[in-house]
Length: 335
Image (cartoon, rainbow, N blue to C red):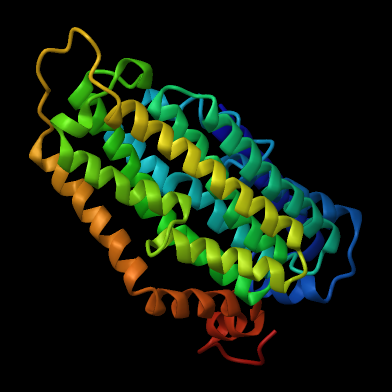
């Protein structure tokens, strides 16, 4: 129902843009809107785009559906959703606002507040949970805030940092949901209060958990460290020190949540009544180890992805290159 509602908002925004410009070609729209004076109709369209895609991405205050739904799916489905689903909304927001509405200072201020709220409410929500799936679901929200922060700043460095963050988060968050499934296989529960002793019974799983958990918190030299450095450094460069402070504070609380999972599921003794450890299928460990290896590789060799992400940030702000590429090979003059 929420997806249908957000899609309706998206279609209404498209209708308004078409009514104002008479075109739906995105390259053509970027030119026409650049030559069109701001008006209430376009402001309404921008707001509808932001809300419609914000619901899909899980931005504050539109994220309420996410922690209430992700924990109900199977772990393989939840891992795919956690890695990819919200990023579709993030990508759509980046594409629309970098191509159509990149000059609105008021909209960027709104995005900055939404980014800070997304980070804070996500991490606070995770801190009070005991179901490992709900902890990870709330952390999807908090990490989405770092991506929106890049769009709110609107600089090449910030957009590049957000692009790097998206790649890092897809890998790490999918891996953590797979590990949540492995914790359930090993302990028989998702409730951290009823689990424990996995460090002794499943040391390999404990090691594999530490990689994405530390990366999500931004501990060097893993991929999450470089993602946070790029976004926070871009915040300081753009003169948005308060957003950088929020990002650093949320990183500290992320360490708390990951430590909570570690202490409750792995470090504390096994609960009474669990006489023998339950095996974790090898295929699960192989999948988790593969994603963990990618996380470590990105952390140790970040330069290729950093350069690619920065080039992405620059291209998002260079609308003329997009227009030329779209209309290449056509007859007549470019718009």
